[in-house]
Length: 182
Ligand code: AMP
Image (cartoon, rainbow, N blue to C red; front, side, top):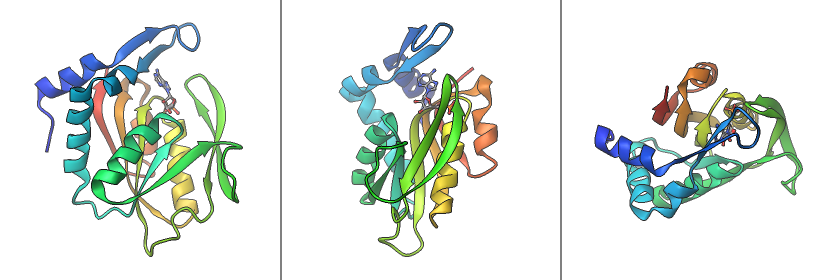
């Protein structure tokens, strides 16, 4: 259920730091190296599957774009639906939107107004690769609630704990971070 210190270190070592991307001063946590490593990807997905098997979820909501990769895979493992939360202008049907500020800019996320309406009492896990300031996830959790679903937890593969994003998002929903970075 919980990852061992060894497994956490293994996952951490599979994620690559890119300095000064997308602008000077940012250390970008590149999860493409985790995804390309079948053992690291499997350790992570097995852990998430075990954690969320008992949550009685109906959907996973993934944040554009790296949240889609983990969210869609986990939705299939759990046998639940997947809903994309997208950057503004990408979704074709009627949307609900929220503005937010991120570690390096300002943006807006949207979800289809009927995204969770294929079930009664939707129970949703929100997922993204990383939480920095928490602005994106806070907006996304708000969206889930706005369209009438219950966001039961927000899950991140990595957390930049020194930015305290988890404190902000915890105002709305329980936060789980697989690997915290001090
Ligand atoms: P925030 O809203 O500040 O929590 O930013 C989180 C969003 O921005 C997530 O979708 C991340 O994928 C992305 N992000 C922010 N900072 C980083 C970083 N240092 N490395 C990788 N992704 C980041």
